[in-house]
Amino acid sequence: MWPGSNPTTSTPGGHQAPPTTNRSDSLVNPDPNLQCPEHNYRTHIFSTAPLMIYIDDFLSPEETAHLIDIRSALLPRDPIVQCLETRALAFQGWPPQTSIERVWTQRYNVSGHYAHHYDWSSNSRTQRRASTFMVYLTGRGEAGCEGGGTEFPRIGRPAGANLRGGGGDGGGEGSGGSKWCEFIECEGEGEGVTFIPRAGSAVFWMNFDGEGRGYKETIHAGLPVTSGTKIGLNIWSWYQAV
Image (cartoon, rainbow, N blue to C red; front, side, top):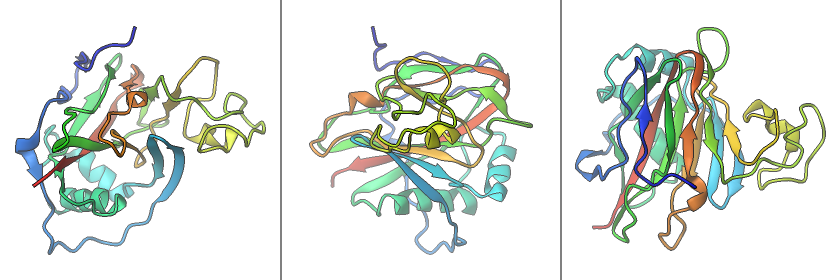
């Protein structure tokens, strides 16, 4: 049985993650006169329905370090944070009638996790949480964490992704088989896909289809951290018709 849309959260020793509630009273838009430095990233399309993209180097090392150093869960909207808001909107092609929700960070220590849930928040024709960026500030390896992947149990791995170093170009809409093992967990069997936390990278997905129906495939969880500290942040885009 899948959990409902009101998840439980466990963040021992860390910040409490914000609940998935209507947050239309906290919508912001970046300063249009803000001058942001040029930033390059690499994209890897994993799925087209729902649209799901893994983004390499979504943050620069300097941006990542700055955000980690901020100790409050609700990020102050300094120029770096506003440039991040701008980047998120630009990535989506500046969708009309869309704003960014205030950005929060989450810190998960050992055993910290977030149970299966949707980011839908609302399923209205006039307002809804249209899309999500899950951005990793720490990742696997030195000074990062182990565990803590982002699991989508209803989205399958590409064919060949359970064979590290093997072939497999025919599976999944992202295809590439084992080439995805840099970004997803490829060990073991079972259904679903788990994205690996990698510092500065992000996973982007759309929460609704073109008719305004929530994608059931986007149910996801933050898996338990087994060592170290996982730090991440969500960027949610909110559509609100005028």
